[in-house]
Image (cartoon, rainbow, N blue to C red; front, side, top):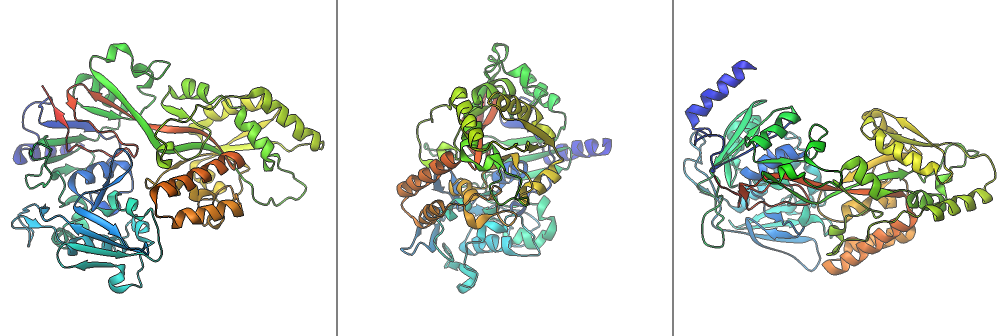
Length: 543
């Protein structure tokens, strides 16, 4: 490790690194990433760590706003035809790949054209690239001319789908769909992972794995603010790879880092009080910003056929599922176990994806009514009940133990089974878990991504319907929503589907997670997104 540090110091000096001044230089934004980067190729940006960096280096056709709306980026406009299957994107004429010495074709700035978009998207379907993002193009009609992705002239891209798929535009906001420089890909081959070239606000200065990564301002970047000033305002971004979360926390307090994301046991209690607010002693140095994350923690209940006909499963009765939901003190769990970092909910889909501008009413614990429901079911089933078995992993034993206690209060005996993550995932997928703790994190910002978990066609293990919930009415409305192109009508159908899930309770929703950012007061222009993407274009840092 010592040689890596020494080597990093040499690179720092030779390339200018962030030798723009000391650690608090207002032109350098600094943060720590506890998980090392594995690639800077957007085709392999499958987790937040590489997404945060690749989004600084590359641009996509479109982007997702903090209000979860799709907006133009390097495509100045886009539209879909009356069939809902042909999308046309018209590119801006002022977007350039920056001059990159040593790469043929990039001896000077080169305008991004339609063929670059086609090349970048086709890479995702190239088996040799083995991109984890191939799935975002599954709806594209590969049997159509040009494989369904066609360049028309230098500024127009046409993408043909197999059938109407309203979420498609949202898929193009993922990091996978960022546009790469073909010359750099051809020149570096597999080493493009560490020599990325895009049209984003920053470009790679250097990257030493396990040590640090430095980005410099892209002087060729096309975007300007409302006053005509070129973005970004920052000159550089410095990313450390320190595994010690306690050291990251101390770095934030001491000013070595400008920002920290998420909560960790190493510092959670020192930063937040019992209500989840920033402690007074830190309020002069940092601020806390939170926004609902597109993630739901829930208890799933298997509703499919059981192998043992003589073993009646009480959770097959919707009254028991409703009683279990009513018995949960979600507000108390959020406060005592998660320091207010999650939002209690009894609905599966986050409200921001349903066109709901207001917050839902906080779920209320209805303990007496839950006891009455359980008693009514026991009156109908006087035989001996089997034990209810809740499967989880070691990370969530505290939550499951609290649920076990609360369900005991309404007369339900629940045992907890702690499994390894691999075994737990396999048992849930195979339908071998009666009850299971799980979470769903959106792959893209559309309610369809959550609601597809309850479509009959998506039974696990082939799909994400782990509960094997099946409802002809639900499937019919789901198909209507898939064909509906009017955004307001789609939202209405999605709200109807979410209400069905809340009524039938194939899952018992617990919390919507929150994006939690701690930012030093020197930072302004900060943008926090429900998808937890990092946008540094308009960030400023003062002395």
